[in-house]
Length: 321
Image (cartoon, rainbow, N blue to C red):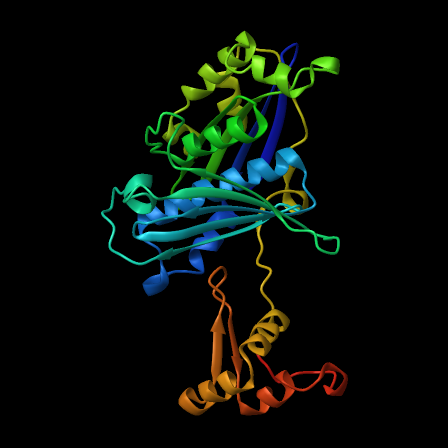
């Protein structure tokens, strides 16, 4: 079962989180089997993005959707992982070229040096005129050194946006997508100010020790061992206070927000002329969800319902999924 484990280190300004996406991750991949399947490196990247998105959403408890996106100038033009406040997640990518089986982040997304990472927080209940918050960082460090792993990109993002030290270990294959997050907490009281937090960057001995231990975790251990074993092996000398895991209805799970009504609104945005052109050419207007693979089909009769004013529509629609 997919799960999130939260924990603190007694006496230290350090918190941790471990996520393992199992059945929900394999279920997501199963929706793109055969010709629609992404290449293996892209599947691994999306798994790391999904795990990282769950870790970030679970840490900030944001009421809305967190979107982690990689915008690329390589064969992977866009990779997206979305995690909502109930920890429902989905992920997909747009791939336009061939990839070697061992392609890394740079080859996939940053081939020309123009790749970037964005994190968007889209509130569930927006106020009038309210825009989502978005932060964007390039796929290189402050000295323009290339960042070859997603974990490095996100560590750099957290340092830039929150002035907090963060250590991330991410890994994914076709069975498991997993991640370990270690983060230095802001100091308490009057010290919980930007300047004081910046002064602590890289200098807190407790955080540096825990982060070093976390960095020894290998990908095969993160993917193959259960949470109890991982935490015991890494932090057996530390006093770790663990909380009840988030699993089942409270934990991470694959969930897509596409719907027939959303597709109808999209078709209405295209306009009646464009819709009728699709019907004349193909006999159907067919829209597929890139996240979950659901297919929504509309024929000429459905078009009359799609473009009839809402007050005149019957209570049901012939649009089918």
